[in-house]
Length: 166
Image (cartoon, rainbow, N blue to C red; front, side, top):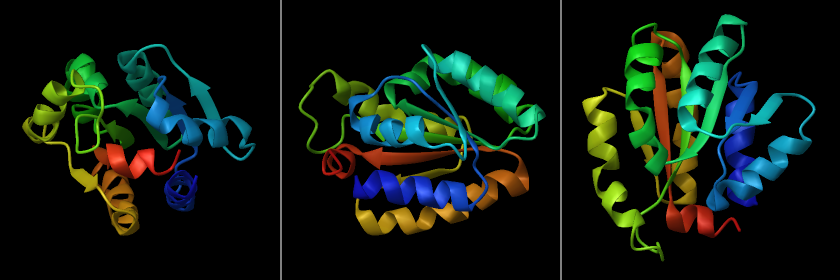
């Protein structure tokens, strides 16, 4: 749980206080920690787009939201990210398990994995790719950027990085 604890510590230290997640095995340790955390608001949601809408509402309620999801969920969420979060300049952290990266055992994940970064770039979402533990130290910079310019940011966490957390 070393990776999960560090990520959550950094997010909370930088003001993130509202968390949502869709089910994800690689993020299960982080979800378990969030379920027990009394300092923040946490809930599970069934779909990514619903989570994005709720994050927008949380922002209007003076919260700083984070949505935990798999990169496969980005494909479901393009319109909500672009026409809601980007258009209305809603700072939101998209904490993403980056499936289809080295170590991935489910071959079906490789297709979305191969286009994830390009999709985020096309949507003009600042993206941090974390593939080793030391990369987590860069998260603060992206959280600050999200607040400063009012944009969602994506933090991609590789399969092997999150698998080592299990």
